Length: 81
Image (cartoon, rainbow, N blue to C red):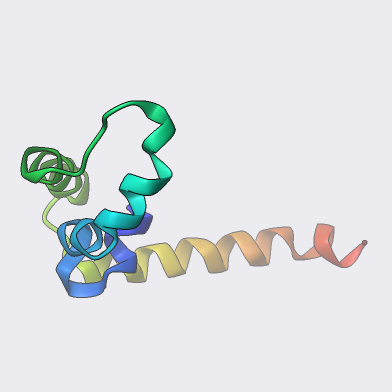
């Protein structure tokens, strides 16, 4: 979901397209995984299912709300250090 939101409106498919070459270099020691069309479509379908019909803006707003809640909840712990 982080990668999906990082690419903005294009979502995970845009992220995969944008970083395809660098991911292939990073994954070289894993064998032969590739971000081919089938892999990108499968990842996109998983994101769509996980999104429950929410668009990128709604998902980003939820992420931001949760991060803010976590920061507020941990503020006392963080201020002790």
